[in-house]
Length: 138
View 1 (cartoon, rainbow, N blue to C red):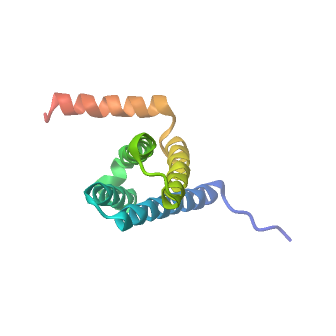
View 2 (cartoon, rainbow, N blue to C red; view 1 turned 180 degrees about the vertical axis):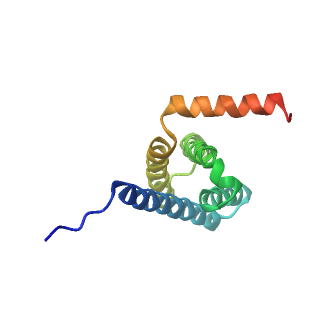
């Protein structure tokens, strides 16, 4: 009797799906926290997180530039953390949100590395994209 084995590609797709689900869930969680705080800055922050969460799962053109969406989410989250550190209020919900955002930074970094390669690969991809934008349509 042979044991049941799962192909590595199936395990990788499953792991990628779990990782993406965690990223989207945490992004929506921090969006909900910011939304609940009210005020223009928090509302805009919540909308930014919601847009990035949507872009992480939308098909079509977003699928081709998902690496750029991941970089945007990483930058947006990092900027939010730094902004809070510099001028944010210190209360319990803020610390919970920053913990969520720190986990989000770690997971997005892992997703970037697993799916899109390391920093050199991303730099090459960005340079290629920039060169095509500069060259314009042919």
